[in-house]
Image (cartoon, rainbow, N blue to C red; front, side, top):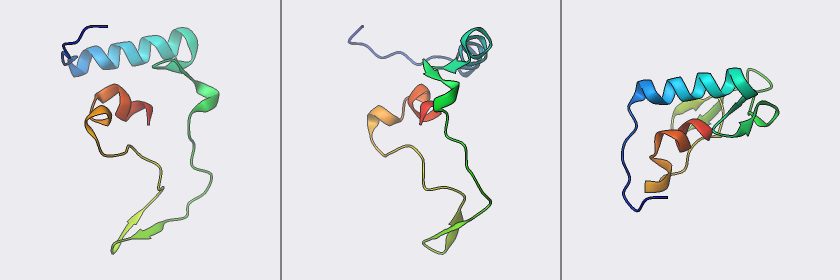
Length: 72
């Protein structure tokens, strides 16, 4: 792995995501059976707003990489 981080164009990420999913039913090496799927229609109140799910990326530089956001 390089010590220099280079952005991947959005189109390149989509090509990788759809290509990998079609070939192996995974995205960024996360198998389809591990994907999170919301089980019901409940909404969660948070700070006067509503969320469908409390699951999501954490804050931090390592989570701001597009593949980590997609994986989360």
